[in-house]
Length: 144
Image 1 (cartoon, rainbow, N blue to C red):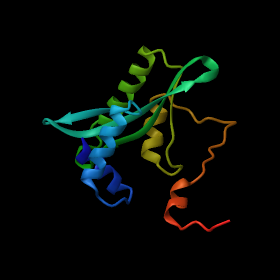
Image 2: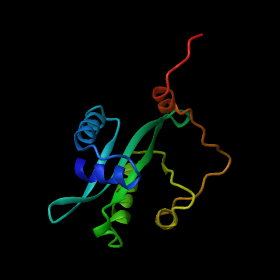
Image 3: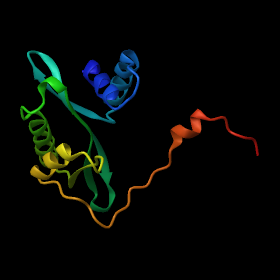
């Protein structure tokens, strides 16, 4: 699984780091910060979906957030991503989650088509905001 996850990172321009990837995945799964479901082809991981379960405080329940969905290039267009996506939706429903959400880049047409076919709809009335803490770690901080 870590090898495929490292390939996924490289697909998005991150330098390969098999051992760090393996260590990070192990920590995430052990702390139950992330759940990963793998698709196997000939006994090897050929796709995966990673999910975080978060509190849905107003509903006093949970919400599932799909963090990553990836299928190795040689196994694309075989329905693997759709099966992984449906598995997460089914698991979330069975667990009593209030919703499953995800985000992707605006121009990622194949992903947007897949998500729409699975019933995902754009959310209006919300803004996605973040603070880039990684930027802070890369540059020396001045003194006050």
